[in-house]
Image 1 (tube, rainbow, N blue to C red):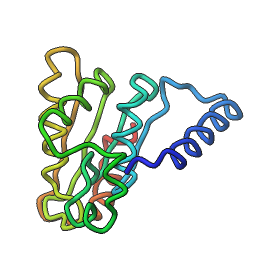
Image 2 (cartoon, rainbow, N blue to C red):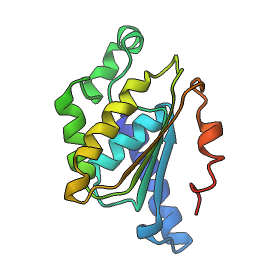
Image 3 (tube, rainbow, N blue to C red):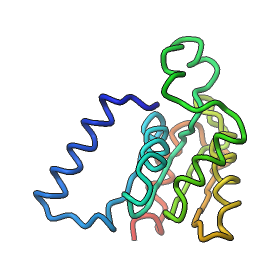
Image 4 (tube, one colour):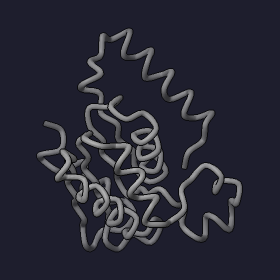
Length: 155
Protein backbone atom coordinates (compact mmCIF):
# COMPACT_ATOMS: atom_id res chain seq x y z
CA UNK A 1 0.00 0.00 0.00
CA UNK A 2 1.21 3.50 -0.64
CA UNK A 3 3.16 4.84 2.32
CA UNK A 4 4.78 8.19 1.46
CA UNK A 5 7.69 7.79 3.90
CA UNK A 6 8.64 4.37 2.56
CA UNK A 7 8.20 5.57 -1.00
CA UNK A 8 10.67 8.39 -0.37
CA UNK A 9 13.21 5.97 1.14
CA UNK A 10 12.88 3.53 -1.78
CA UNK A 11 13.23 6.25 -4.43
CA UNK A 12 16.24 7.78 -2.67
CA UNK A 13 17.91 4.35 -2.52
CA UNK A 14 17.16 3.82 -6.20
CA UNK A 15 18.61 7.22 -7.13
CA UNK A 16 21.77 6.56 -5.10
CA UNK A 17 22.25 3.08 -6.57
CA UNK A 18 21.62 4.34 -10.11
CA UNK A 19 24.24 7.05 -9.65
CA UNK A 20 26.83 4.87 -7.89
CA UNK A 21 26.55 1.95 -10.29
CA UNK A 22 25.83 4.03 -13.42
CA UNK A 23 22.43 2.44 -13.85
CA UNK A 24 20.45 2.82 -17.03
CA UNK A 25 17.00 4.28 -16.23
CA UNK A 26 15.61 2.69 -19.41
CA UNK A 27 16.58 -0.70 -17.96
CA UNK A 28 15.45 -0.09 -14.40
CA UNK A 29 12.60 -2.47 -13.71
CA UNK A 30 10.09 -2.07 -10.93
CA UNK A 31 8.90 -5.23 -9.26
CA UNK A 32 7.15 -6.10 -6.06
CA UNK A 33 5.16 -8.88 -4.50
CA UNK A 34 2.19 -8.73 -2.18
CA UNK A 35 2.33 -5.33 -0.46
CA UNK A 36 5.29 -4.63 -2.73
CA UNK A 37 3.02 -5.41 -5.68
CA UNK A 38 0.71 -2.68 -4.41
CA UNK A 39 3.72 -0.39 -4.19
CA UNK A 40 4.72 -1.25 -7.75
CA UNK A 41 1.34 -0.21 -9.09
CA UNK A 42 1.43 2.98 -7.06
CA UNK A 43 4.94 3.99 -8.15
CA UNK A 44 4.39 3.05 -11.79
CA UNK A 45 1.29 5.25 -11.91
CA UNK A 46 2.83 8.11 -9.94
CA UNK A 47 6.01 8.19 -12.03
CA UNK A 48 5.00 7.20 -15.56
CA UNK A 49 7.97 6.50 -17.81
CA UNK A 50 10.44 6.28 -14.89
CA UNK A 51 10.75 2.51 -15.16
CA UNK A 52 11.64 0.36 -18.15
CA UNK A 53 9.06 -2.24 -17.14
CA UNK A 54 6.84 -3.28 -14.24
CA UNK A 55 6.44 -6.78 -12.77
CA UNK A 56 3.62 -6.87 -10.23
CA UNK A 57 3.12 -10.11 -8.33
CA UNK A 58 -0.05 -10.77 -6.31
CA UNK A 59 -0.68 -7.07 -5.74
CA UNK A 60 -3.51 -4.67 -6.34
CA UNK A 61 -4.58 -1.08 -5.93
CA UNK A 62 -7.42 -1.49 -3.43
CA UNK A 63 -6.88 -3.09 -0.04
CA UNK A 64 -8.88 -6.25 0.63
CA UNK A 65 -11.91 -5.75 2.89
CA UNK A 66 -10.25 -7.34 5.94
CA UNK A 67 -7.30 -4.93 5.61
CA UNK A 68 -9.64 -1.94 5.33
CA UNK A 69 -11.31 -3.04 8.55
CA UNK A 70 -8.03 -3.63 10.41
CA UNK A 71 -6.22 -0.54 9.06
CA UNK A 72 -8.73 2.14 8.05
CA UNK A 73 -5.90 4.69 7.88
CA UNK A 74 -4.54 2.91 4.79
CA UNK A 75 -7.61 3.77 2.74
CA UNK A 76 -6.44 7.37 2.37
CA UNK A 77 -3.41 6.23 0.34
CA UNK A 78 -5.11 3.66 -1.89
CA UNK A 79 -7.63 3.59 -4.69
CA UNK A 80 -11.22 2.41 -4.34
CA UNK A 81 -12.06 -0.93 -5.97
CA UNK A 82 -13.92 0.71 -8.86
CA UNK A 83 -13.60 0.40 -12.63
CA UNK A 84 -12.50 4.03 -12.92
CA UNK A 85 -9.58 3.41 -10.53
CA UNK A 86 -8.23 0.60 -12.71
CA UNK A 87 -8.69 2.69 -15.85
CA UNK A 88 -6.85 5.62 -14.23
CA UNK A 89 -3.90 3.44 -13.21
CA UNK A 90 -3.70 1.90 -16.69
CA UNK A 91 -3.82 5.32 -18.36
CA UNK A 92 -1.03 6.63 -16.11
CA UNK A 93 1.19 3.58 -16.71
CA UNK A 94 0.57 3.98 -20.43
CA UNK A 95 3.12 2.29 -22.69
CA UNK A 96 5.37 0.93 -19.96
CA UNK A 97 5.61 -2.85 -20.41
CA UNK A 98 3.88 -4.74 -17.58
CA UNK A 99 3.86 -8.40 -16.60
CA UNK A 100 1.29 -9.31 -13.95
CA UNK A 101 1.45 -12.55 -11.95
CA UNK A 102 -1.10 -13.87 -9.49
CA UNK A 103 -2.13 -17.16 -7.91
CA UNK A 104 -5.65 -18.19 -8.83
CA UNK A 105 -6.20 -19.60 -5.32
CA UNK A 106 -4.68 -16.60 -3.49
CA UNK A 107 -6.48 -16.20 -0.18
CA UNK A 108 -4.60 -13.03 0.85
CA UNK A 109 -4.96 -10.66 -2.12
CA UNK A 110 -7.96 -11.38 -4.36
CA UNK A 111 -6.89 -12.50 -7.82
CA UNK A 112 -9.68 -10.29 -9.20
CA UNK A 113 -7.48 -7.27 -8.49
CA UNK A 114 -4.84 -8.44 -10.96
CA UNK A 115 -7.49 -9.49 -13.47
CA UNK A 116 -9.05 -6.01 -13.33
CA UNK A 117 -5.66 -4.33 -13.81
CA UNK A 118 -4.91 -6.63 -16.72
CA UNK A 119 -8.27 -5.85 -18.33
CA UNK A 120 -7.69 -2.11 -17.95
CA UNK A 121 -4.19 -2.34 -19.41
CA UNK A 122 -5.37 -4.56 -22.27
CA UNK A 123 -7.93 -1.91 -23.13
CA UNK A 124 -4.98 0.43 -23.76
CA UNK A 125 -3.01 -1.98 -25.93
CA UNK A 126 -4.52 -0.49 -29.08
CA UNK A 127 -2.97 2.83 -27.99
CA UNK A 128 0.45 1.27 -27.51
CA UNK A 129 0.10 -0.40 -24.12
CA UNK A 130 2.04 -3.58 -23.42
CA UNK A 131 0.72 -6.04 -20.83
CA UNK A 132 1.22 -9.73 -20.16
CA UNK A 133 -0.80 -11.66 -17.59
CA UNK A 134 0.06 -14.99 -15.98
CA UNK A 135 -2.25 -16.63 -13.49
CA UNK A 136 -1.27 -19.86 -11.80
CA UNK A 137 -4.62 -21.58 -11.13
CA UNK A 138 -3.56 -23.66 -8.10
CA UNK A 139 -1.10 -21.16 -6.59
CA UNK A 140 -1.85 -19.46 -3.30
CA UNK A 141 -0.39 -16.10 -2.28
CA UNK A 142 3.22 -17.17 -2.83
CA UNK A 143 2.87 -17.11 -6.61
CA UNK A 144 6.25 -15.34 -6.70
CA UNK A 145 7.90 -18.77 -6.54
CA UNK A 146 6.45 -19.62 -9.93
CA UNK A 147 6.77 -16.09 -11.30
CA UNK A 148 10.50 -15.83 -10.62
CA UNK A 149 10.97 -19.28 -12.16
CA UNK A 150 9.46 -18.11 -15.48
CA UNK A 151 12.21 -18.55 -18.08
CA UNK A 152 11.14 -15.45 -20.02
CA UNK A 153 11.03 -13.11 -17.02
CA UNK A 154 14.65 -12.15 -16.53
CA UNK A 155 15.81 -11.86 -20.15
